[in-house]
Amino acid sequence: MCTFTDYDVLILDRDLPVMTGNEVCSRLNERTDPPRIFMLTAAGNIRDKVYGLEQLGTDN
Image 1 (cartoon, rainbow, N blue to C red):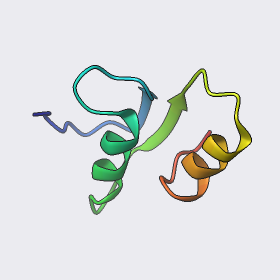
Image 2 (image 1 turned 90 degrees about the vertical axis):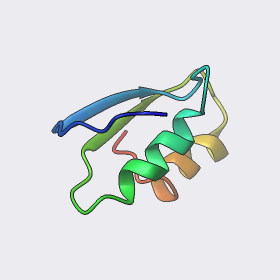
Image 3 (image 1 turned 120 degrees about the vertical axis):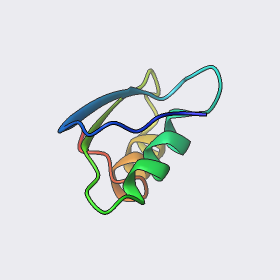
């Protein structure tokens, strides 16, 4: 499905074709040393932004 490589920073799009950026972010944060994740999104809704920061652990 996806291969994990050790990166310091990941820029992730929320709208991916196979799985959502939210799913990728959640899986990466299960690792013992996850990368810093910056999520790109067209969502202007505050609830989506807060969810990304608080629930998914994105950095921005």
